[in-house]
Length: 265
Ligand code: CIR
Image (tube, rainbow, N blue to C red; front, side):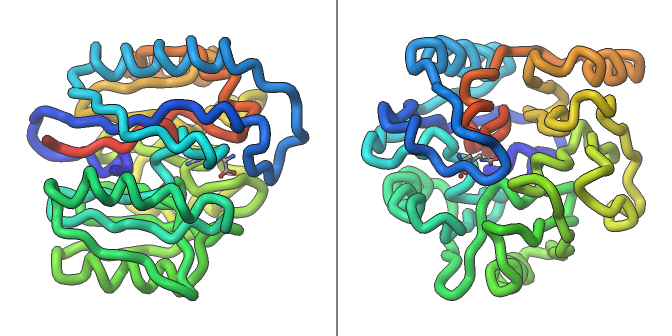
């Protein structure tokens, strides 16, 4: 699930994660130059991330690994899970399309399923949710047809889907994620804030452009340790994010939300 779909009364959360592929060094890269990724360090950081999810109250289940898919650790991109329905995506990067099958198998017993189909493309990293408002980024990975299919899948469940133009980063959730039911953390360089009408906005520190990505588990927040200035802004406003070092997977253009699929249990 998009971690940001977590609003409403407190409950128990389930998180799906996926092991890092040994081929992650062949990952897709769009805005970053390729730099060496240390698999051992990435593994240690990923384990710390999973422990943090558990500490925040998630029941964590690892989905069958997909070693032949370099980006498969970034499980967020292959489904968007709501309380009422799970949408299996059709990732924008062709190299990632085979990642969906195993995730579909674990979600099938939990939610009715909808599917994004060709020519639609949609990455879960392009979707965040505030109550019944769904925001979908129009990016290199998510096209208008994908957004239209998402809208159709959700219409019967009372959600509206608002398309958001994104420039300069990979996914909408690189530019904005929610910290509570009314507030978003934003890098204003990458989206037009007018699209976030009605929401309160916290801007990242300008020296930390990647700092707008934060995982929300109910009222708790899980954040990357690389953004101390933005963290200080959050803390000054009364938020207390738990921080983990996610720097090695950041070299694969992944951030904290990408590594889990969260849903209300
Ligand atoms: C990709 O380009 O697809 C991966 N290297 C990174 C995906 C990160 N996912 C996300 O932000 N939701």
